[in-house]
Amino acid sequence: MGALVEEFPVILGAFWLTIRLTLASAVAALVLGTVLAAMRVSPFGVLRGVATAYVNTLRNTPLTLVIVFCGLGLGLVLDVSFSESLSTNYLWLSIIGLSAYTAAFVCEAIRSGINTVPVGQAEAARALGLTFTQNLRFIVLPQAFRAIIAPLGSLLIALTKNTTVAAAIGVAEASLTMKSLFERHQDSVVAIFFGFALAFLVLTLPTGLFFGWLSRRLKVVR
Amino acid sequence: MIGITPLLTWRYTPFTLTPMTEAVGSTSLVRLENVNKHFGTLHVLKDIDLDIARGEVVVAIGPSGAGKSTLCRVINRLETIDSGTITFDGKSLAVEGRALAQLRSEVGMVFQSFNLFAHKTILENVTLGPIRVRKIARDQAEKRGMELLERVGIASQAQKYPAQLSGGQQQRVAIARALAMDPKMILFDEPTSALDPEMVQEVLDVMISLARDGMTMLVVTHEMGFARRAANRVVFMADGAVVEQNTPDEFFTNPGTDRARDFLSKILTH
Image (cartoon, rainbow over all chains, first blue to last red; front, side, top):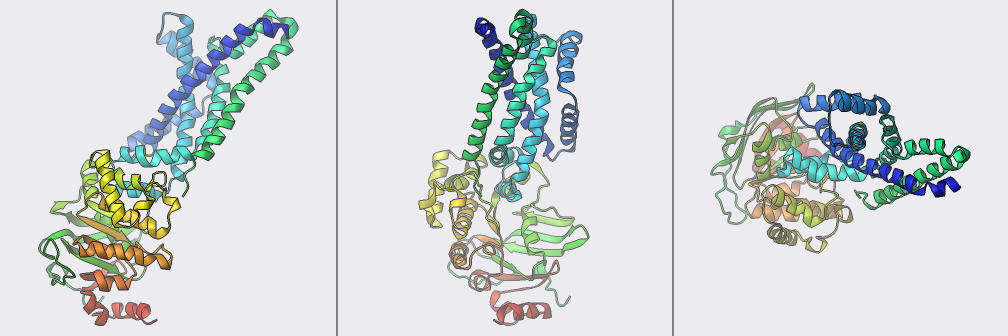
């Protein structure tokens, strides 16, 4: 217990990084996933093909490989740089990896949400003269999102836990910090382990509860 | 098939309910020529030729599977056609994109299942088209929307959601939503078929008042009373073809084909 109290500022900092990683990746994945879903239902074959290929590739690649590719492939080989500071640069590269990976799942969740919207809704919008993008933006997607709030919550929880993979390219989020604390306090390994596990629960449990409440509140009554 | 009237030469003789703003039959608003449509191997529209004049109210009737709904849906291209031409207001129907959206904004459509936007309030349903398609200012669109809701008798429900309204009320909102775009024509695809019997009349009343105001309408319906009261012309369809068309009086009292006589005997005897 003593180790947890002693290292509290370090642990807090690590979890703050986890939260930032999660939120940044979540926003980026939501935007990219929505674009991909729009492509997958668009009338243009090329766009549908590109989006389908993207989803199948990213969804079937282990996250660790995606993150390592971002760190080594983008960072070292292609020399993509966001910051002078090495740690900030790897933080951004891991956000790219996490959001690119999660976007594939978000896309599929949105697509299943679109399938819950009765075809008559889109037909009525077309009959009013709305264009394809207006139809998606004002009629189809708002109803699709309300139908998939709970699964999106699950994706956010999965993303929160997936941020630990960023440790693979040296981002000092919670799990990497836990590892270094193990080395410094070899007598309180169990306490540190349960402390971190509990802290993850503190992040993810409320997320699940909040999204469950939100999905009941925003449900479209037909 | 017996005695198909040559449609292109056919002209309706004015039969005015009340004075109309434009002379009926003067110019055609919609013209279908040689239109064919298949669903797989099913030939749903066979060489359809049809003219609808400005201000005319045309009722399409016939047994189910006759192609009436499809006829309605090809006019604003919710269904594509395999061959033939459709012109609206002198222009050929656009294939895709903005030109098609523009055409659709001029043709209102009322569906059997209402299709009100479930996540929007009644007023938002009516103002969405004007604001997003016509680019009218919100307050102006809302003012006009409330007038239209007043006209169809739903103004007091403006802030509710579609699921909170009865079927008849929802269908009247759907009519107001179509009217909000100031369409040149409204297509009605079996507007009363999904309604409880006691709600049919309130919707028909709104439609009859529209007809009296000179709105161009194509109505697919099984309501023979509406056809008699408000239609200028009845188009009888069977098996994907227009079998016969005439004024309602002529059609109902003296049908010209066996197919129509057979159909009428089944629906009018009881």
